[in-house]
Image 1 (cartoon, rainbow, N blue to C red):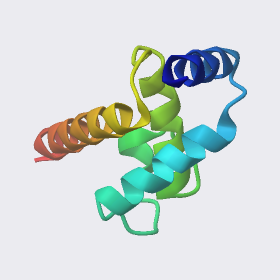
Image 2: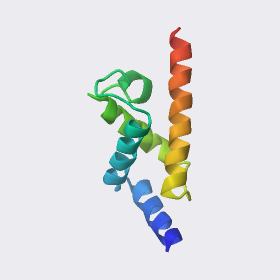
Image 3: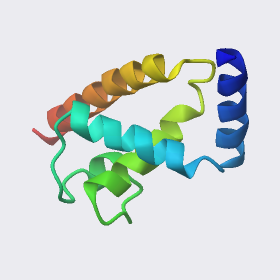
Image 4: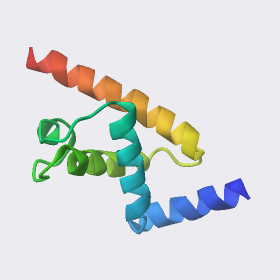
Length: 96
């Protein structure tokens, strides 16, 4: 059952149809990482045309999901948290 859900999610993500899944992941990341409303992360995570941190995070999640096939939702969220922590730390280091 779980593998069917993962396979279905992969197909939807490859077609770009699972917008709600991306939004849910981005929302979970904002809670897990205590990301506040604003637009401070647009240039660090987004394409540059997003209006808010959550939109930038959604863009970032979309790009991150492509190589992360086959993971359960819990594994996926844990991996995204690690990647986000690393990317934000790298961004801070580059800015200093």
